[in-house]
Image (tube, rainbow, N blue to C red; front, top):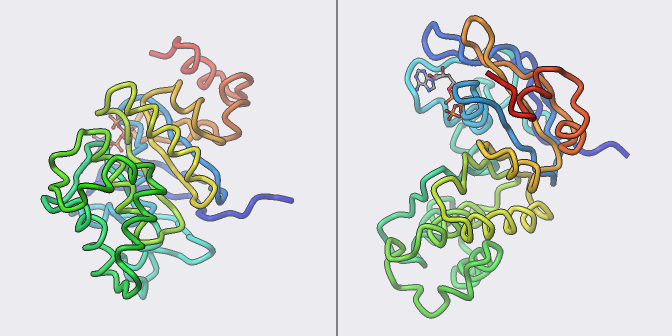
Length: 256
Ligand SMILES: Nc1ncnc2c1ncn2[C@@H]1O[C@H](COP(=O)(O)OP(=O)(O)OP(=O)(O)O)[C@@H](O)[C@H]1O
């Protein structure tokens, strides 16, 4: 049985004003898998990632051509509310960015403004448990989130994203600001979370992509400085039996 396609890009180009940052990407992302975006700096990984939940809308001058669908719905159609898109497709950033509020409120606040009326204590606990943070914070939920370590803050941000009950979590280099032990915790967490969520991760770290992802998309920059998708497929194949010479060169460190 073929995997369910959660997000599909069809001939998607992304512009910053006149500059075409990403050129004509075709990509199908399957549900409950981890998909990694890799490639050299400036090849458009973050730009593509941000386009998947309309985060790019917040950058003036951004425009897309082509189509991006989530479960068959064009997320850029006129009647679609970007806030609603972001409820289904959450995001975790490179630098942990908890609110300057208590650990509890970091989870509860977003859920509340998204209309959650259920048992808040339960939501906070289950979200923190899913983010593998509950044991470390359960006795200090009223403490400021800013007093947590960087790695704990990042897991709190993941818990905050989970609390909105998205189907997809986008992660833009979620561990690059963290030490190796915290990085491992995030990687372990990603492997856990894929049982319930579709995850797309941008990473500079190829070993990390190899460790955590099921599929990998490799991007490069063309002569016009536009990013394009070189190769996409199962991570093992892309790393050990790439179809394109460019992929092989990059994976084996011969690129550039
Ligand atoms: N807000 C912006 N305004 C104008 N150009 C931008 C903006 N953000 C990114 N770009 C340009 O778009 C291209 C793709 O950038 P992007 O950040 O998506 O690449 P990346 O592969 O994620 O890079 P890195 O690995 O360094 O984070 C680059 O040429 C970059 O300079």
